[in-house]
Length: 184
Image (tube, rainbow, N blue to C red):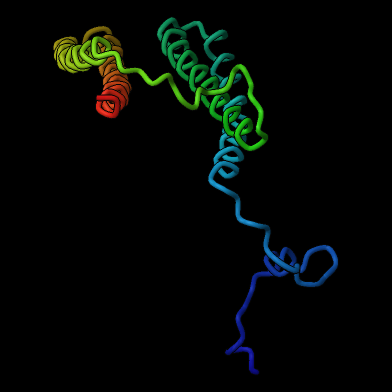
């Protein structure tokens, strides 16, 4: 076989494929289950995020600019909440893989709520959030240019938070609605 017909593999790939003994490894590692994959990915992300949180906190605490301090404080609150939620998800995954129960794990199932009053309240909350989003965006537009744009940015951020709230409320609305329809 001449060199033109051979597959060329970079040296690093050859070394990795051969391993420390210099022979091809017998078989690739088994594929991870969705639970294992997500657990490994979340643990890696949590570890990397821990460094970012420390840097954000350092900037928030060391700055002399009150706007930087305010914005970094908002970001830190969100990131800390995200970090805590990812940790709860990871704990749930570990519990499921190890047949254990940890008090801080993400709940896997809720009570079978069939409360029609809660269902109607959620419908109202979704509509209220939707209305609030439009108001906040209107306020943001009216505040454009004031104080270097800070009020507009904060109002727009609050509108996006309200979109998140609406999304979560819709999730609850649909969840309770499906439970009510199953028991009816």
